Image: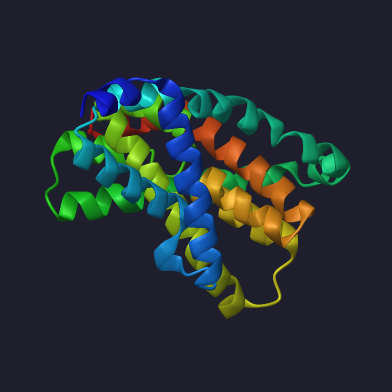
Length: 236
């Protein structure tokens, strides 16, 4: 027991645990044929939560080791702009419909979740945590904190939204049929942010580029307009 107390205090342990659990989840998901119910991120999240509860480890101690991965989230998000260079001319020609689609998508995501939450009489703070669920985690956390939500809950909801979007997107695209890679990528970038973008790169580099663009546009639009919109609607 004394050995575990000493060993668990090492930040390196939790970094290794995080990477090992994710590698296991990826392999399990692959063996199960990419099942939507065994998405690597959600599976990893569940395993790590159970492990922390069983070992009595606080989140603060765990984060001492996992914060290196958290730090890489920012550079990884910025790096998504690199593929856009190859499609810069096409994006310039399509800037208005792309901006309009991102604005409408962001608006629908917010209004729909607020309406459903209001119908179920969810507490105000939970509604404010749900509102930015369709943008990438750093933006969602900042927006939730500003509008009176729970940043930690917002971060969790972002993960769930991204996992569901990436899992069910193949079925939706197959149902609609005949969609260009640009459309597929942009649609999933608007709705499922970074996790959706990871799936889009599996379709093609073009889909990934447009998904990254959609994620960035949706994040910026949500960050700037959501607080004002909520105040105008009477939620703030």
